[in-house]
Image 1 (cartoon, rainbow, N blue to C red):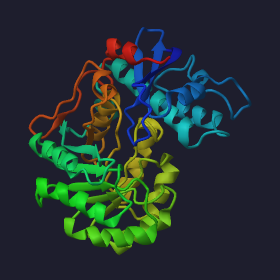
Image 2: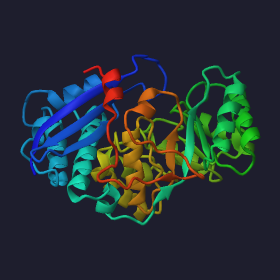
Image 3: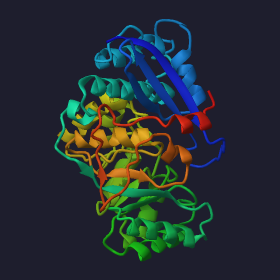
Length: 375
């Protein structure tokens, strides 16, 4: 089996909201083979930027588009393809958009491998025997910090739908201490004292602010505090973690590759990492990250805030990774979140079932793809 073509499809709701909502657009990557099998992947980046990363002509040995690195290759050569893409984008990549596109490529390759084997990806990777995963509801704080009714509504939905926990993030959180407390208190009032309540700060604090704010929020017992500072500020992560051992300081959705995550774990002393399979380098690279984390006793909470393609990839990865816990379940109303695949992944009795179909276990809903397609 050889790769004959690599295709990028950009989809968008055309809203262009300046908000932390990764489901406004998406870049799908299709890898076509001479056997007729097609692999599906997703890259979490601007579709237009991702298209350029795929299609750019050669500007030197370490500066060229990535699609050409796949042509004529066997999809089973995932390590070779990953290394070639990393090298050929070295002058403009190593993190950011290049790694995002490599993630979509790698995801599509594993989808092909599973389809060729007639097995789900988690079985090909080496399943742990997990057939369902506990999800937590992932929602945004309102843009208006006085809108506590919105927080209560979202928290109530999380409880009634049977989620294992609920995470609020971004929006108006992180700017004023009294607003932060009131918003988190509103959520805690609804979900009760025992349900895990997580907060995503959105990289808005410096070290001292984080230490002070978390002391203020301690009575509300946040289960974890996500991305209190910039991804690169490992000393900041460490100082916050040491000042507040009663909670989990976590991060990593903005981090890249095994080298970055090793520093986040070893220097940042985080108590959980959150790689994104559509950003970090795909399944191939995140397996290496998982091994580093497992060796150090650090759990993985995969990030995922886009479409059902990534949901399927995350479920497969969790089912094959012993130190991977919980499924981030974005419950927003974007049609790209829910409609791009024929398969749905509902929460049933507090669990989401792991796909059992070959590959990632998803089929594109072409009616929806064409409706939102921008190229």
